[in-house]
Image (cartoon, rainbow, N blue to C red):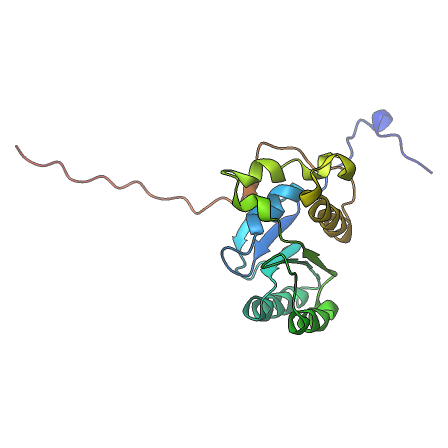
Length: 186
């Protein structure tokens, strides 16, 4: 039996935003969070996240394995987003390591390298609307990336529309206490 929310006066609850963290700085966490309309948690600190971002390198995958293991002990399996280090994509050894990570992740999604973002002053402006436009309307270099993002979002169980916002939401930093310098006597 379907419940009519209008008659009960309740609104359907909005799902909380996805949480994204990277295994290190510079792995593409902000790019992924911006693209899928998620909260950017920065570098992984041990708290459970929905999406764990790493590079397609041996060191980054080792960090991802450790982080995924920590997250799975909480009963939650993150989606692993692997950003390609260059246009050639993951090497054979990296692909083999990705297969070893599959049991510890809800899904492993490799995001292709997008060369054109190196040339843009603010690539996040282009990233922001990728999932709101049909793939056929995107420039060719972005189509594979947008398709991989759709797969990533679907793997989180959120295949619906991406929340629109002016930018990625970052977790609030700890409040700083204001310091004032003593006044100098004249």
